[in-house]
Length: 67
Image (cartoon, rainbow, N blue to C red; front, side):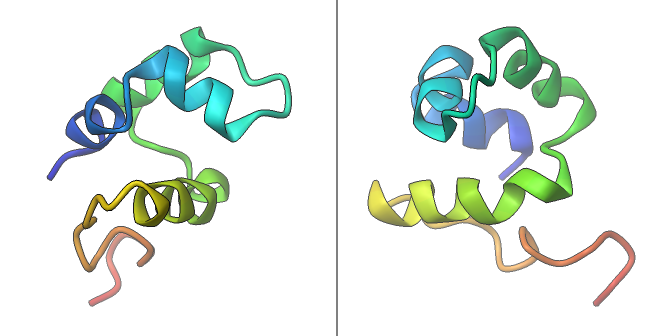
């Protein structure tokens, strides 16, 4: 599952921005579809996904290049 698919599965960029809070604007989340979800938001996104019953890839919380 790509970051773009994760964002869509969590309701899209506007919904995810609202769920993350903190004044995050949907345009920023929209950029994540192409640049990837930043590491500083991944834990929060994983908690939202778990709450909504969305299973994320096992590597979602691993830093790139770590296996």
